[in-house]
Image 1 (tube, rainbow, N blue to C red):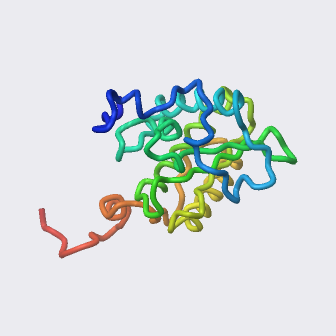
Image 2: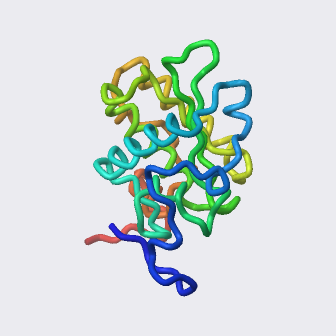
Length: 195
């Protein structure tokens, strides 16, 4: 899917870096999840991010606000502090850490996007040079603690089962009212209809 054009640019391409470029000014600063770990920069970041684009495309990890593949957020000049940063764990370089910084502290898609990212990477782990990709949300988001707790539980279940499609119990964070109602045995509002 293509992004929308900027009213301030000659074309949509003027507001995005190329996937093969590493432009530090257009990607977020690393946060606490990546602290004391080996940040991926330059060619290492670019190579991983190009594969991330492919995996997100295949798995449908799209930012619905901007109507584009989530990997493109790292390239968007309008949001230089948003997107993914990556680091290899210091004690185990077979584990990649990925920290997502959303565009706003109240981004309603952060829950869905981070879980989708986790499933996209770990569901195709044989295509990566890692045994596991751990995902966290930057603490600037107002629900980061609760979402990160769910991501940790998802990782734990994935390591137990080998499946990225395990369901989390009480998965209410970030879900919309329709999703919550579908999980409820009783209707969330009003009396039950006879038809």
